[in-house]
Image 1: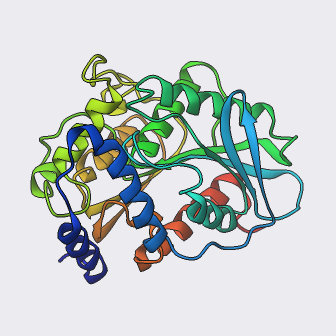
Image 2: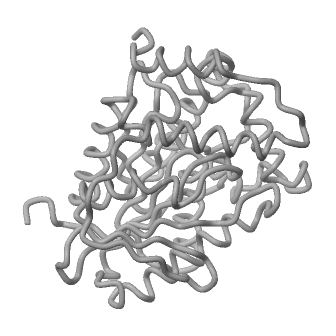
Image 3: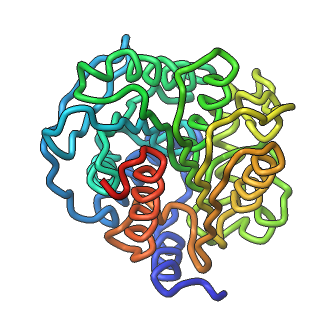
Length: 311
């Protein structure tokens, strides 16, 4: 379908305000611009019962409780931003929404960022925070037997890699993996990359820069499955997945390819493509009606996986 009017408005605005960035200031300027953009488009923060800053074995996390009820499920989430931008603080609005929509404790992970901390620092932090969440579930008022992991964009990449690692290292057991337009592969020549290379918020050249930052200028192999989870030889035995993609997103094809490979491996998968949408819409419910719809979709999928949908 055509680009949604709400998406066109955002694309036109970002194209009109793009500036040439000196290479030495690109990280700084990209982070500052994205933070301002999220403030404008993220929407109003919803009230939750409690928010607590914790230390997850050296990794800062924000813990969101939607209610005082004991034994709530847990959802460990990793923000997007190409492994380079974003933070738990900037993810605050969406973390609140997810806690309320899922009726689960959300553990939002403030992992280290490239290029200051390239691979494997971000994935190591996320893995450590996931293990900590499982080990400390009761202390957080949660139930370790109902644990999910998820993220958007690079956060979806980190979630997919953590799900593979949990399978390979005998836990923690995961009820669901939520992958929102995830980075799944290093191939920048897919049909969706070429069709949406410029003008749709996330651009092909930008993704190449993100990969360069994450891999420390190419010192790490981008085809390694812990960077490109679509390249994993075997996807059997992974937890059920909800995969969300956007039609006008360079990452659309790889997210759907990952969903297809999961299905082929016998993994239950719910795949939802948001036609007319662009990368980033999920965290911008202030600008996209589809963003709020996707949050509700995630909340319903989580409740179904936790067995709380009709509770």
